[in-house]
Length: 113
Length: 114
Image (cartoon, rainbow over the protein chains, first blue to last red):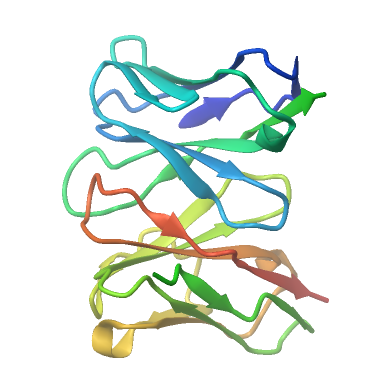
């Protein structure tokens, strides 16, 4: 079992729809969770961070965390063609001073006009 | 504010040669990380500096890899001698704090070993 799992996709949604991206993780004591967006050949760009159970909204993006079920999701409302990219889920350290992030393989999102 | 910068963007070398990658973190970020993505796999952690000290080097694959951060500013990652399996994209990231603080990534160096 991988430490962080994502469906590789591609996930295809029409423009204006809600895109739902999911991620599960294996280390129950993980404390921090991040979503990065990556365009081909570019750097992973941080779009959301979440640390507590529940929802966190930022513009068209909502991150949802459920530590009991060990999953974190990202919702993108009113999806735009420019949202087409690979979305990476990353899980932060369980404790101590290391900043090691564990990444999933990423989900490719295609938003069709 | 300038982001994390990496040099070179691409490097093609032959097996057995030496390559040095450079990373300049965001100004003021004491924490610097190296990650690697090999073809078809997820991004994997290599090591973490706090200023000039190695905080966690648990992800370094073997002793052919040497990372330095003299003076606590920019960092270099040297691969010597390079092997075919070292091919991939090497990312650098930086953050203001440790642990839970968000990390900001550079565009990466694409390394190809022939």
